Image (cartoon, rainbow, N blue to C red):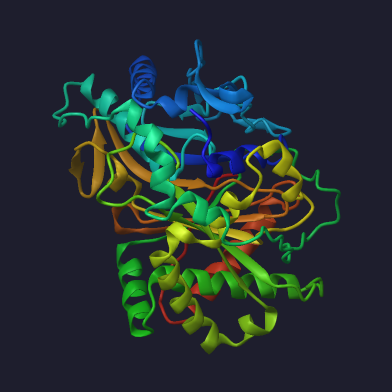
Length: 443
């Protein structure tokens, strides 16, 4: 199959130092059985063709998805004390020779952490959760657990994913709506001098986590409602404010606008049930320093913009841009200049990933049960593109709010990330909610 414009965009933006891969983290209690878990991964991947495909020249000598005759889906198992040491950028996945999935498990007799790395050309976050739900289904099934029937997927439906990306708008109309424009936004300023090689050998996955318990999350929702906001609106507002303050500390602010990239799901209720794939677009929300300083107008303008984006997501600027580039993406590569900052940060709200599972599981006190494992925590991080030095991923599993923050380890230390997270949480709270912070450092 030919690549869709979004898949091509992720593939052409891929770079060994800035791989277009994202991480999903599942933490379990229980004694994970290695052979059973590996078997579950191998069986689940058979249901998702995009995760066992390579990119090779095929139809009309253009890059296409082709079935891998042989592929490696073996999980890297180790004890809790065994680090996952990332040397250089070994999160990079070469889709010409490797499938778009890689997995690591660290465990002892009482707990396990599963890190799944996905290439964003192959699947989006929701597609990854579909696959992971199948993994847990196959694992639970080996323990005789009471699980419902697996959902059905039709492989040929994947040919419809281009139409699913643009909705009812004709592709020719998208491709002629506007010329491609490059924007250059403020980058987050490093706190240390360096050449971008600060953390080339860094502990994986370099994520900092702040968690609000159920009561705290409830208070946050109620407080946001009083302001006619959603929690996501408040998170977005606080992110702009924190980025501005961060860059103003050492006077490194350039006066350019700040930009936040927000993914938007393109799935609709009248579509077929796709297997794991990319059905997502990106919105780019930008504000000048003076607009961010105007707190009252900042909040109201963000509310209006996010509502509008949800209604127009199939015809977003990003999607029309992708359709306006040359049909041969090798010619378009120069249009995405690496030295330009196309987004200061990413803010992705995944909600509760288990609600994206296509299968039924038993639960205990709100925690999903898969065989002899109980899913205790979920988390992860979006890709870090060159010059986009921060990702913020939001999760709400067990009705808790979890902020997962990752800063580019090539420019920021673990203590830098912890400090930014602290400032972000303090700004988000605005002094209106009592809280006792729960911070989980992955480094």
